[in-house]
Amino acid sequence: DVTIKTGGREFLAHKAILASRSQVFDAMFQHSTKEKLSNRVEIEDIHPDVFGQLLRFIYTGRLSLTTMEAMAVGLYAAADKYFLDQLKAECEDHLIRRMSPENCIQLLLDADRQPPPEHLLANAIAYFQLHQSQVMATDTWKYTKQENPVKLCDIQEMLHHVPIATGTSRSNEEKTSNPAIRKTGRRR
Image (tube, rainbow, N blue to C red; front, side, top):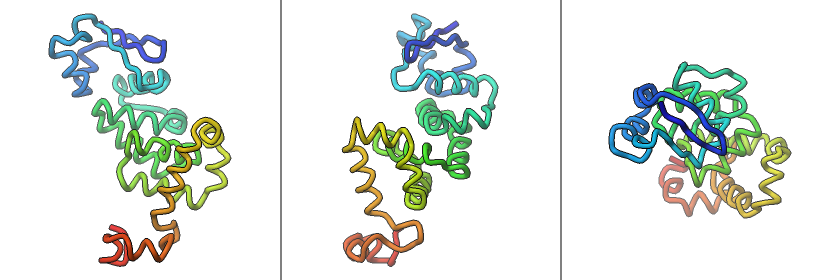
């Protein structure tokens, strides 16, 4: 009884099911919103493939490993937006256990727009430090280098200000200039 449009694709769904799984959809369909009155929802910030899998999860509670491999970062962001805690936890667990060059660069690129939890960001940074050449060989890195090199500079700046993966810091200057490190000798 509702049509959801994203990225030029339309998905048919049931308000009752969406509302029972997501506080966001529940609020959307409880009040006299345009979505409730028109039975249409427009979503602009989620790729249609990701939304299709989000919908699959809402209905079944499951996703395939192949889906997680391909879309974990996008699904994490969508689950966060729609307060789908179980999906968010599954994506987070997948990203920690099975970090890949593609997932790593996606997390780092999205960190300013959709900040992941600190431990997940730290995991992506450590992965980047240990597998830099593989991350930089991804199509996403190459595309970003061409289209938005400033974003890659931001990532490199972020990497410069964290301890390297072996546990030592990037610079002695950081140890004395960062109050969190100065007090304890390590980052909090």
